[in-house]
Length: 348
Ligand code: SAM
Ligand code: SF4
Image (cartoon, rainbow, N blue to C red; front, side, top):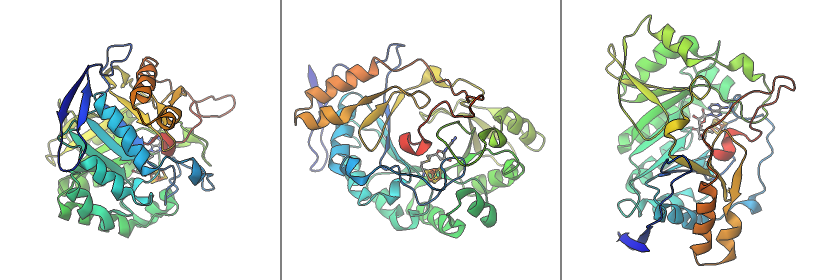
């Protein structure tokens, strides 16, 4: 049985399915991350090889198809959507999808967010706000322009700073994400923290995950956040707080700056027990877990018929396969990552 949940603007009414997505472990799936492209204008060393082969453009779902898929998920109980990639803002006409999804806020969807490297933000910030986006994540691993170029290979630090300025001016709330990298930005964390909190932004630090072949040895980059936290505690007072954003970060309040600092620790802690999300790629493949290879092909069901019943059945079937958790273990014998696809395929 379906129940109508409302309409805004010219959007079609979305109907809530009385059969929401509950996985075999009793977790409700309410959060969808959509990687709208696997392409990117940066080549961060921990994320990609410099010479990446991307998906042929013909394999991509159209933005209309992505919109239809997202609507099916909202009908099935998704309340929050995050657009990611690759770099979401390099997908041609991406603002069309943002606008379509923005119209669903308050009509089944609670929140639409975005994770971006910031390179194109100055162009899009105002329109993002106008479409209903209120919070975004910007990835920033260093405040040193030379180091920034080194870690992103192709990125321009000044453009990202312009993007952050434009986003704040437009009224978007920013959370900075930094991947903690041994001997690269560990000593810079206090500065990054002061910068973020000084500008009213939360900061979240992330452990590197072994996903996809890159040009470097991941074990050289890996820094357990327990070490980073112990280091920060030499200068700052960190108090655990109960703050939740629907993501996997655990937060502390930093007394000296008054701001929040989040830790995402996929490697040293299992953050899976409260997992509420699934991830859709730009080809319509649904990954039920970031750290597992099992996936469901939703493109076939999407294209088979205009009627969403088949699609919703395919989503239901996929949710029955959501695993309890990930196991990111580097295959040390062959020095291969446990998950072969890059983070840019499923999105961070
Ligand atoms: N291009 C956008 C960006 O960088 O924000 C969105 C996609 S990116 C894949 C999303 C997040 O994943 C970024 O914060 C990035 O730093 C993080 N990331 C990429 N590869 C990672 C890895 N192997 N381990 C941990 N985080 C990673
Ligand atoms: Fe691009 Fe984001 Fe991956 Fe960096 S982390 S290469 S910006 S997708």
